[in-house]
Length: 187
Image (cartoon, rainbow, N blue to C red; front, side):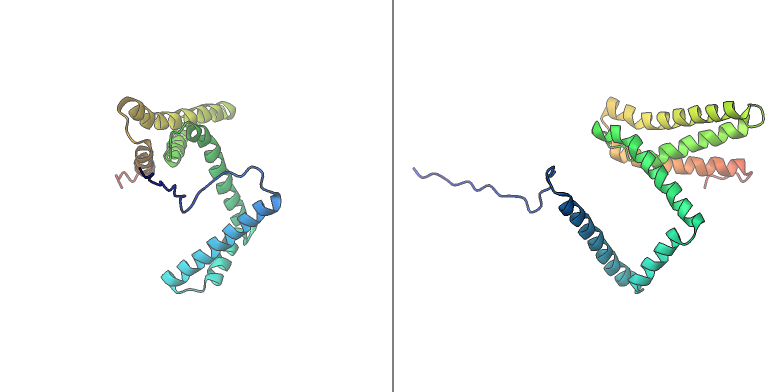
C-alpha cells in the first residue's frame, strides 16, 4: 500500500503580525511603502492625465501646506477623521463593519443645525451648546442603530447597509439644507 503524499502549499502572500521587529525595520517598511505608493501613483497620474507627476505632487503639497489657512483646514479634516476612526474602533473590534460613519456625522451635524435654527434665539449659549451636543450624539446613534437592528433582526449585510445609509443621509441633508435656504428641492 502506497502512502499518498499531501503537499501543504503556502499562500502567495501571508500577513503576520511581527511583535519583535526592530525599530529600524519598522521605519524601513513604512518608508518603502510610501515610496512605492508615490511611484504607483505617479505611473497612474501620467498614464491617465499625461501630466508630470512631480508637478502634480508639488501642487498637492502646496494645496496642503501653502499657507496657514490651508494647513488649518487639513488639520481640521485630519482631526475629524481621527475622531471618527476612534469612534468606530469598538465596532470593528466587535466585528461589526460600520462604514457608515460619514452618514452618522452628517445626520449629527444636521440635528445640530436644526437645534441652532429652532432654539438659537431662545436658549442661553452654554445650554444651547449642551443641547446641540446631546442632539448630535443621539441623532448619530439612531442613524447607526438602524443597520445594527436590521443586522440583529434579519441578518442583513452591515457593510452594504451602512454604505447605502451614507447616500441616504447625504440626500436628506441636501434636501433639508435646500428647504432651510428657501429653495425646496429633492436634489
